[in-house]
Length: 171
Length: 171
Image 1: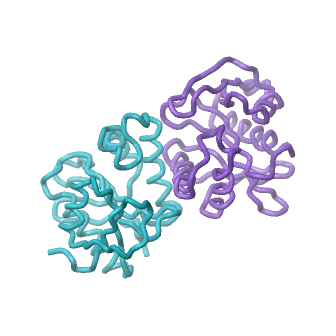
Image 2: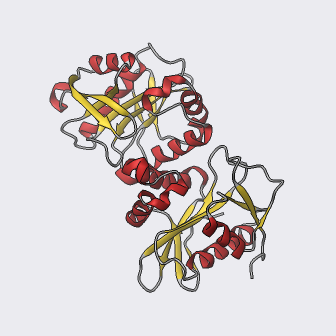
């Protein structure tokens, strides 16, 4: 399916395309990506981008490119994420380099959570936060999530499951 | 150019790789032979699924990509062959995976058709195949398609053999 465009106060959430490759390559080249399977080469990053787009084809939803409405600059890769062999559907957030600490992850994740509840009909959702990823943990707390416990992934290792407030509590 | 238009050979329908071809492709990438493609049992089911997602996203990014080989007689998807061009690949590549029915000439039949279609009908200048020197079956197929080793070509990975395809190079 073609992703819709969502807007928040400062952000536009839109379909991923090849114009998002460069900011993603910079993110995945950096140690900041170590919590989400990085660092990766440019080629592996391209495959990740194509895989994120293919996730929409296979699932009918996926993560959005998050752009600053004012400039069009990509600040994040955020939204519903549920690849095969995942514990359950989650809202995932990766902030591109230089865009941390401005509240973009919280703002965009909340918009995609609202979309998952309203458009996809989800009744519950989690987020997985890697051990030691303090920035991401703070986002989960700001979104009202509660810590459920650890989950160990075959590739990404041990992460913590944070459960979001349900559709009524979150609205 | 409508690269996504399905076409056919004597025994096969070729159509862009899509969710309905997922099951045999996923099983292949999860198997031992998936190792040639960066998957395999050690990489786990998530990786096999993501490679399938990547093949679908490839079509959306470039407009060309991998075709499912659907046998006319049985309707079964028996392999995937097509164009692969991630960031970091020096040139556009034709690559192949047979999920079933090896040794019956299906890969060569589809490979010839795709080489002719892209170099002939679509007018591309050239196509290469990057092949691990230990993957003898794949090298044998490249040679059956009339490709020759281009030792001067830039490689994606240092160990690769680069086979260059030519229009009408095959018998």
